[in-house]
Image 1: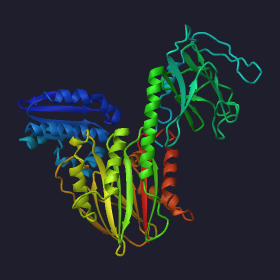
Image 2: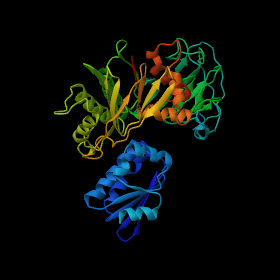
Image 3: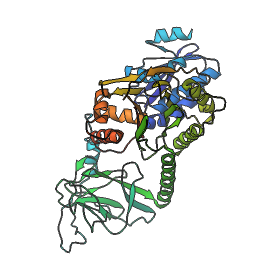
Image 4: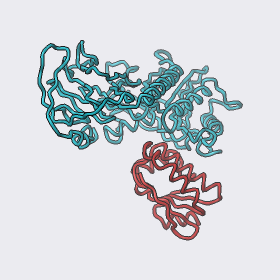
Length: 112
Length: 398
């Protein structure tokens, strides 16, 4: 699993996760992602279009990212959630914590 | 069965067959010398005494049995005097042999009928094993482990702790119920690393309470977390909470087990309360798979919709209680994540018709259903080790 953090526009960062988010994969990136993520200011768009599977540790990672953003009064939204992952997120009511939009522009609108 | 298994790993094993020169070896124990030709690389140099070699025989729902490999070769077969005796028609009397050559370990098939496989590649010539390589003999799996002596001691101690944790969770699970208005049957198959599954139920006058939970992550930490929750549920240690109100129970647990206060761990949970005389079920879920309602008399089988935050993930989350009238003879099935994922993995997204079929075989004891379903899914998976706990709780209402 890989991740990439970039600046989407002033005050908005984009975090792209890519690959199957099973326990081993999340374990491999969690420390580095969390450390880099703490340097990010402002709002965040999370792009999950490259994630075909999200296990419980992957969900835990997303929740911890949302909590980091929330603590500094930023906002976070996600986009590109694949159908099989969408079902898991629906069951867990995860969209109550991190709202979801079908594309990047709509995600940016959610942060406005 | 999912395409791609068990051929996975084929390329890796093929690469391990480094070829250099032939060797001759004799089999110990049978009094005759049989010459085998190996084209595998023969390591040389002094033996490193700080390295220990072992074969781990992986077994269902328990820690693997460990066979240390010293100077003497280990014979694997169906009968004594094999050092590792394996049952089953696919195992030959003298199946294969594992021995040490310098600091390396190799496996040699002894002309077995059904073959010896290393990482899914059939052994024709002796093969040297890489750390973690799996020798498959029929349905049995022996994993080769190469460790420094002190690492091996630490690993053994850790395995023993895991076994104790597993036994503790097992001891807290309620016994099946064979009689009465609500009957209960279940299977609990922990993976080797412990997946944090737990469940429970109890009768309280006209009410019957049941729950299943699954902690995020694996290991002793996840098991400790599940045990904490089980003890709260067993002792009904939720001050001021009406335990007949599922949403209130989940809200209280959500406050009590906030993931920030519990090393980042959360759990999913389904909790339901049945009013036995009226068969009215009230239930709520926190991120858990929906319960499945099955009515054998009419063939009805459907998921009971439920939605809610994982317990500990969102402080103050407002859970909702749903209600359903259960028909006489109805059954309620509760699954853990590992059960659903394994079944999806081997059979495609889990068809509820298959679940019903496996659980409800005419003429077979209903109470055996969960175990039977587990065995069917395991057989489809090729008996590879479980990645996660597999729990299935079935309740039947008179």
